[in-house]
Image (cartoon, rainbow, N blue to C red; front, top):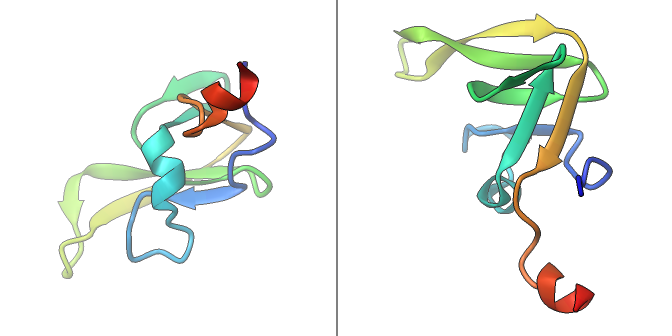
Length: 90
């Protein structure tokens, strides 16, 4: 049911980041951090074991949200199947 082996090891929702992947974000990414499902994750790295979350409504001088890096166990999965995956199965 889950596609944890196919999710990117590192992904960011910021288009300025080199780890931004619009196709993966369009499928929806579910994140579980330290056993709790999170919906406020800006960036994550499964192999390094951290997530970045926005720090309220605070922004830096360029208008980008300030983030806080939290360390711990990270699980990621796709919430929707890839386009064409339904036709390949059936």
